[in-house]
Image 1 (cartoon, rainbow, N blue to C red):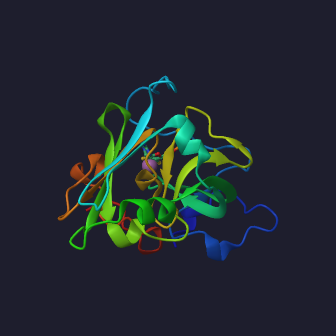
Image 2: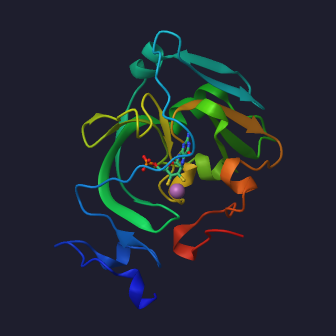
Length: 201
Ligand SMILES: Nc1nc2c(c(=O)[nH]1)N[C@H]1C(S)=C(S)[C@@H](COP(=O)(O)O)O[C@H]1N2
Ligand SMILES: [Mo]
């Protein structure tokens, strides 16, 4: 770790072993905002979330249906590729495995693309998505997400750099081969593991 990576002293109780190389904690009351383009204005009457592609059954949910699905809370750390991390926030949403058991990915489905408002996208191998800590997230520390942070729905994939946690999620596309998402096309690392500092190509 470079000495300048620790500009801020760790708050009491923060475990340095939870901070990946080259990352700095935000102040506890600061959650930075980062996105490309404008913040959408959600229209919950018309909003839909679609799961499509290489599946046994496609699925379309409206907002009410989405919020009627089972939820769980995951306590997890987040790491932005630009260098900030936050530890131990509580993230609430529909466990991805609730969705996977409903849509039944095809045997040859290997990758998933998250599709968002205004064309933002990010992709990952199916086993990255299919994990216990991955959520279709609508809540943070006990309240609904704010619109700026992705309400009504964001993907939450805490083991990867935070650009994989796509805000304003509208669809998941199951694919039989890899495709690059918005930042991946612009030079971000496809694997995005913060512990291996897979930031950019
Ligand atoms: N739809 C959308 N989701 C997005 C982005 C974006 O530009 N558009 N930026 C990503 C990046 S680079 C980061 S670091 C996180 C930031 O989330 P936050 O603003 O809630 O901290 O959102 C990710 N999800
Ligand atoms: Mo980011």
